[in-house]
Each structure stands twice: as structure tokens, then as C-alpha cells.
Image (tube, rainbow, N blue to C red):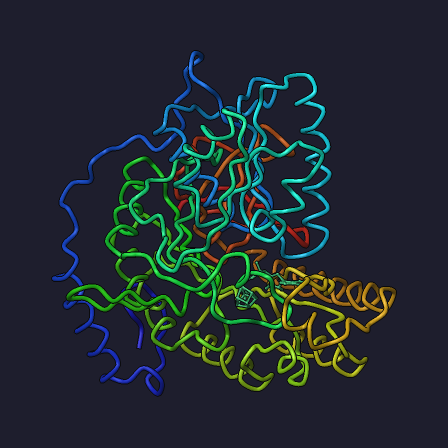
Length: 492
Ligand code: SAM
Ligand code: SF4
């Protein structure tokens, strides 16, 4: 069967019954969430005024941290601060931090040394550490050479203005309490991105999965979902402000679940509601956990042209034995079954992943399992990491970080080399084809070129001609590198 959006649906997997369920859900949802007819315009960009106190924020780590910095900017702007990109004129310097691997934390300590030089020049500035490191290392940070005035965890950002006042009067501003409810649901983030085209929307916070290597459940607390009405409002506001792409964010978006007074919304339903904001608003989401990505989500992607054909599905390892030690709650076979489902339900979809190499007890055979799974899936893209033991995680308490550093490095290099080949093949198969591309900005390499992305999340570079940032255009691909497609605009 071919849907109106041109996506093929296979008769044997998408039965009439499932079709009927999907349509029934559409109807139910449109009556529950009547969208406003016209979207009210509200400025969501930073406002700058010379005479107001200035906040400088530097962000490290995942997309969730980028999204959190925008919430922080919003809270501070509505309390009389303006955002500056120049540290030299800031009254408050905040660093939003990541604890996921040791090198992420080392980078932050390095930046704090630079901030110390700034504070020597201007002792009145306040320096604050926010995010995961604030949660994990509150004491060390507070004792750090009298540099840090504020330590604020991911669930305490509403308290920032009060904590700043406390710090201004010479006290230490600290709040690292984790919450079971906080989602910053009704706060409109101030958008700090440069392009004005694509934005993140946080749909949930925290994580309940307790992967044995991971610090996130400890630094970001328990999983909680955000009211879908506020998510929709944010998507509508972004669209009214000219944004053409939103990425729904959560540590495990597939376990999104909102139970309101008279509504019960799962991730597939939320995805559909956001896709209905406008056919011209692209929708992406990240991250999916293999154990939870349901066929219902895949069918929803198939139904909407504007839900992008890309799934980020972190596998972490190709060995079922290692997956068990990682507490991932799926096996290699289960992961392969989910890939088959993606390929079956979505006729064409790019798949990216995360891989950790050198986890506790990993043997050469386990490593070969990872390499063979990578080839089998044919990942279009991957983030690849060496295992970094994090204090107090289950792995640090019960397992030994026993793969020698040089073996970790050797295995990581092999994984990177293989992915390089797979990524190149994935790009090469696009040469000669045309793709719809959302124009996102000027190419870093040349002012005569724009860059944008296809629905498959592949970056395309092309001569500007007469298009503008935020336009949808068609680009015919003539060449590629392992990271980028190169082409020219064509009529479609
Ligand atoms: N929640 C997402 C998930 O489960 O895939 C992403 C979590 S984390 C921010 C992003 C990636 O960092 C993980 O997928 C994993 O590959 C990697 N990671 C997490 N803890 C790590 C550790 N201790 N050492 C190395 N890599 C790690
Ligand atoms: Fe960490 Fe696992 Fe949660 Fe991802 S799903 S944030 S890897 S505990």
C-alpha cells in the first residue's frame, strides 16, 4: 500500500486493523487537543539592553544541556538580566556542565581555570556551575579555590535568581535538590541557537533505566514527562517565530507518558500531535531506547511526511553478554529485530547509534560482535566512546574497569574506521539522487554556499542561488565526503 505521503506500507505488517486504530487515535487526539486557529506571536530570542546586568552561559554536553541553558536564560531574562556572548562584560558567568565521561568533566575544570583569570581582573563577577557536575561534585566545586559562587543542579534552575542574590550578599548560592515533578513545563525557553531554524524541545527529564555505566540517573534524577499541551504550545511558538524543525528531547523518549485529568498520552501520540502543528515543521526526536521503541511509533513516523526518516538507536555493544552487564535490558537478537521492524515499516530510514568500547570484561570476541553488528545494521552515523568509569555507578561498584587503556584505544580506532567506511557508503548511495533539504545556514567553508539537512539527518552543502535560510528546497547530490553531501538546487 502507498500512503498519500508516498511512504510504502507493507500489507502484512500494517493491517487494516492497525490502520483503523491509528485513525481512531487521530480523531480522539484532535478532539482532546484542539489547536489554536492562529498562533500568537511571542518573542523567544534574547533581548539585549546595555544598562541591565549581563549573564554569560557556556554549555557542555548533550542536547539536553543546550535545552536547559535556554530555560536558564528565560528564567534570568524574566528576572531582569540580559544574555551576553562576551564574557568580558558579564556580571554572572555560568557553565552548564556534563559528567557523562571523565574527559567532559576535565574540560570543565579547564574552563574554570580561565574563569579564575577573569575573576582576578573583575572580582565582582559571580561564577556559577550548573547541571550534572554541580549535582555530582557540589563540595569539590564549592571548595575550589574560592572561585565558584553558585552551584545549581538541573532541577533547581527556578531558584537561580534567589541564589544569585544570596551570592551577591556574600553567601554561597547552592541548590542541588533533585525533584520528582520539575519539568519547567510552562517556561518558554529563550532560544540561544544561531540559525533560527531548528530548536530543541525538552519533553521529559531524568531517567529510570539505570544502565550500569551511566551517571545520568544520579545527576538528573527520576524520569518524569512534561504536559503535552505545553510541548505543543512551545512547538507552535517556534513555528510562529520562523523555526522549521523541532527535536523532541529526552533520555528515553519512547517511555514518555503523560497522565492528565482526562488524557493519557504516550510518545507516539505526542509525536503525532507535534507533527500536526504544521506540515512545514519538521519533527525529530532523540534518544530512543531499543527496548522501548514501539511499532506504534514507527507507524506514526510512516504516516507523517514531516516526521524525519532518522532514528537514533544507541546499541552500546553488539555482544549480548556485555549488554547484560550494562543492564541495557535487550539482547543482540532483540536489537536486530527492532532494526528489521524499522526497515520493514519505514521503507527508507537512516539509523544512527552510540557505541561504548572497552566496557568491563569486554573480550576480543565481544568486540568482534560489535563490529559484525555494525556491518549488519549498516549504521549511517555513530557516536563512539571509550568506556569511562563513573564513580558510584553500578558498574563502578560491582565490576572492574579491566580492559587496558591501549586495548580500549585499539578497539575504538577499529570501530571508528569501520563506521567511517559505513558512513561513506551511506553518503555514496545518495549521489545522483535529489532530496528535500531544510536550509539551516551559511557553510563554514564558503560564504557562497549554504548548508542544510535531509530528512535522513545528512548534512548537504550547495551554492546559495536565491534561496534563504529556513526555506525547503530540493538538492541534487553530485558528490560526497564521509561527512557531507555536496549538490546543487534543482526544481522538483
Ligand atoms: N539516554 C541516551 C541513551 O541511552 O542512549 C543517551 C545517554 S548519554 C548522554 C549518551 C551516550 O553516552 C550513551 O548512549 C553512551 O554511549 C555514552 N556513555 C554514557 N555513559 C558512558 C560512560 N560511562 N563511558 C563512556 N560512554 C558513556
Ligand atoms: Fe544513561 Fe541508560 Fe538512561 Fe541513557 S538510558 S541516560 S545511557 S541510564
